[in-house]
Amino acid sequence: MLALVTGGTGFIGRALVARLEAPRVLSRDAARARASLGAGVEAFAWDPEAGPPPAAALDGVEAVFHLAGDSVGEGRWTAAKKARIRDSREKGTRNLVAALAALPKRPRVLVSASAVGWYGDRGEEVLDEAAPAATDFLGEVCAAWEAEARKAEALGVRVVRLRLGVVLGEGGGALGRMLLPFRLGVGGRLGSGRQWMPWVHRDDVVGLALHAAATASLSGAVNAVSPNPVTNAEFTRTLGRVLRRPAFLPAPAFALRLALGEFAEVLLASTRAVPRTAEQSGYRFRHPDLEQALRSILLPAPPAG
Image (cartoon, rainbow, N blue to C red):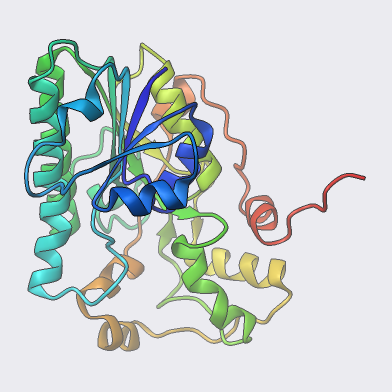
């Protein structure tokens, strides 16, 4: 399967590219992408907001994995930052689909990233893929993002929209930002700690993306989250236990809002998302348990022999 990946140098993209045979990658900096991803990866330059990607990048491609988007968790949410978050997703996806429309032979499937930000702050409600979008900033971004991806369906392309949870993995992501305070012994819950946290191991995000591409009967929204969501307080206790560090210094909600502005609401939101569609389609999670997942990332087993 010849596959094209956008956002291939990102935290998820790198892991996905490593699982593909001779993939193509779209990147703002093609030379840097080639250098960082190594031999066997063909990279093409693309600015997602500027226009469609080059036709040569899509020639003969059977599956497209669309992961590109400005980071939500880096930098304060100024008006300019929020515009970049939205435009990189909405305009970028629109331009990608425009390129698909121009092809004489189109890919079989588009696996397009989205996020559990679709659901917003929903308290104790159990959220499967049928739950409606929130009306807050991220809910509206996700709705616009997914709407652009769905336009590929009219072109005869099967579309799967992966709603990503909090992705945990080695070398970055949400966990990378959490580790320092915990290792210093000053980690703790965020706000009340009662908010549900839809986490997922990066291995399972990649596994779900590949499963989505290979499963012809699968289309529409898919929650890319563990089948066992936890509250923030439980996550905090588990991370502290794995690191053998105390986790008793909470970050009050008012302090988070003062330090992070509007982005604090993302950390304090309760989103009890479950992967109903993924499980019904036959996907089996490699890391369904939080403690086992954290140990696999932070305390990898030594090589045999």
